[in-house]
Image 1 (tube, helix red, strand yellow):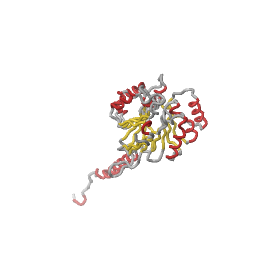
Image 2 (cartoon, rainbow, N blue to C red; image 1 turned 30 degrees about the vertical axis):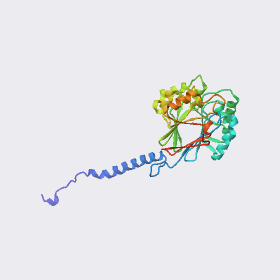
Image 3 (tube, rainbow, N blue to C red; image 1 turned 60 degrees about the horizontal axis):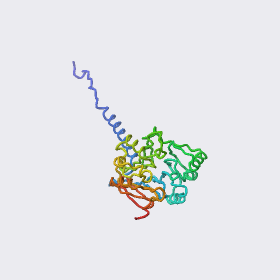
Image 4 (tube, rainbow, N blue to C red; image 1 turned 90 degrees about the horizontal axis):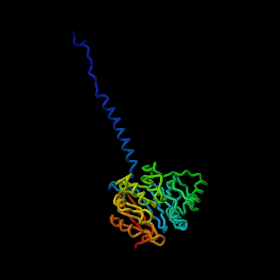
Length: 308
């Protein structure tokens, strides 16, 4: 047969599809990496986070009120202190140019935590209001419920089934840590407890939880409850801050909000001893006034209203 008429069947060119699949793989990797970047605070070339998370432990005497500001200039409020401290709280909010809240948490229905809650609900827009299922019949609590109803607000309930639920707060996020159970004898143990994350830093805010709730958190989270900053439970009462719980949290900084013993003797000496045993730096609103802790996602900066 003449070679010019010989039939020629080319071999399959399997490599032709390789560039196509490579392009698809690159696109998938790019999308995944973009999502990771979007979920982390921006960093500069030295690895420091550009945005600042600012946590203000407001000095409202014998009570709790904590304002958190994220790098997106959004605000979150945990408790209000007692009703007679509202002017102090309102002045601080005005100085921070607060007009609305992304989140408000009323940890439990005691007057030194929700004394001005009705005014906050009435005067500010709130995207998400988080409260425990605990109730009482005080006028303070009933006024709060009245304002919530007047604004047709929906309460996001923190309870056993919501433990571990994650909420996004700009570049930060937080988890519901407690109440772990739906029934407690002491209303303090219904306190909404959260752990907030920002970069490598973390904060635990505890309301008035006592040892029973601490034990439940230990059983649920173990060492996962560790944090750089711990807001000490129940104003430094002897019924809170067990050594076992403190040793698991291992805080660098422990913040106590109280009037220095004028009302209930808080903080109690035995609780202070246990906190001291952790090696944490102790900051007290009765000694330091309003305490502001700022995080760039890696390091913490402390400013206090008063230098003892």
